[in-house]
Image (cartoon, rainbow, N blue to C red; front, side, top):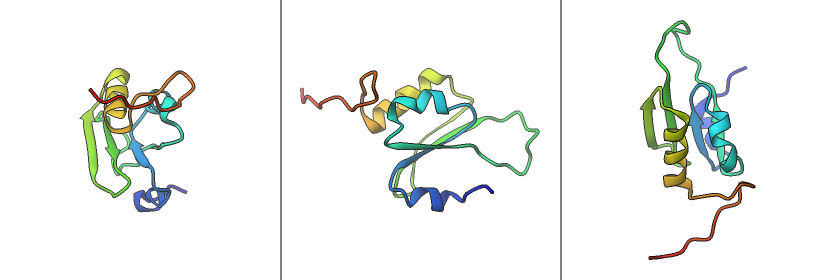
Length: 93
């Protein structure tokens, strides 16, 4: 049974809603939950992707983004990670 967005947000993590986005979000697996959108029109060619902040506001949205665009948005909102998915130390300029 599909979960409602507000139920997923209870985990206190970002939620990345989109088709085929799980691989791009893998480095941030501990800080972001991926969800597959359920639409009223499943045969549609639209492929929206949405990154929702833990407070429920949209952080980023795109129509059919390339995986690199998804990773760029995740880096902007969640920070850079190393290959094991650990957040890199923040170094101010």
